[in-house]
Length: 444
Image (tube, rainbow, N blue to C red; front, side, top):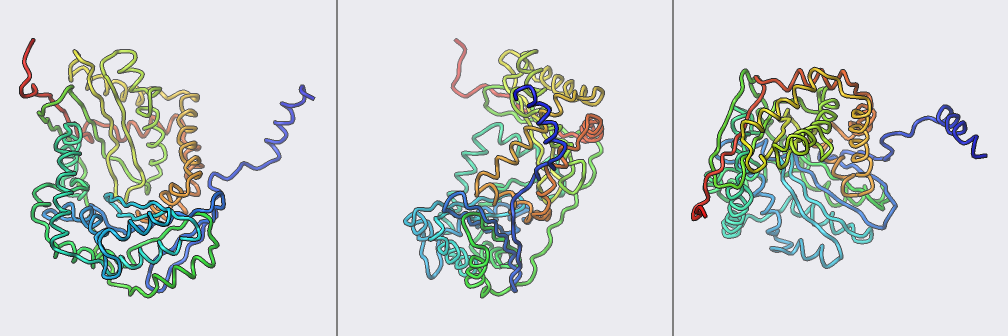
């Protein structure tokens, strides 16, 4: 029997159709007030993840009011007339659940994970604060100080984060992606409770939101419950559309930051399209080949072989409402120069423009992307994250159905073509961190 096994596998491969890359069965409904509802049955465990996605983030902010989306996220935990300050979190914890929220450039999201018999708590609590948030001036002032301290710790006291923030402000001239999600300190200082309340009333309305429920649910009964809690919230005027124009970059831009730091750091950002462009799939594969993990080209060349860099990396994110940056970075080895590191980064990038990747290297990158995508389906939370992100940025949940199939179609010629098209000097912004001698340090 053993000697026939390879032939059996060949027969099965010919006869059986390939498994679908996206096997999740979801339902999409729109309530009378415009709230979109996406439901996914997943009976692996008696738990449900519930997420509310508002189409508002730093992309919707204007200069002078940056950080407002994130600050409002904090205020959403400060209570309503029905549930006081901190009571939301206490109720969820008391019932064995967990909850949190996050703000991005294109969305603000609130979520809970609870057992299926406590799921109604998410509906009641989220519907209440969608319509009835309090905006106490004293609580606002306190929370603004919390956000300012968060900014100090995560950005202003972190040289690399500070460089990246400044580099984005140079790479984007007009688009709101130039501003950090947490906001500029000068703007945070002058935000008022009235600003936050006006922002809340503009964007926190059912026709600007999507709710996603993934887990041990019966879609029919859950939809009925969602209607009961949310459909009574009145629809409001459609929020204003943010300005998304960014002029084409016509020459390299550079920014040099001098800060107290251990080692020099180089950050390269190239303007690249988002999910709307078919090149997005190839760019994702290219990013993995160049910069994902210790087997990537940048790490192998600059860390292992040449020993110029202590660390390298990069990222490309297609799932954004507007085109973003395809970026790479490197930190120098002690004793190496910034010039050598920057030159080394360009050399690795240039090779991809002239020499097609091998079939083996290409397949490895595709396998990594597919594995990350499919393994994400094991988690109710990440299933909901994928769906909520796609729906909120405008791609629609259906975008996910063909994602892996489109990744599989990428060829070596595609990789070389997009490297030539987007990784150009005139399309590049370079951020350089030059370490200053730390105060109080002295030579031995």
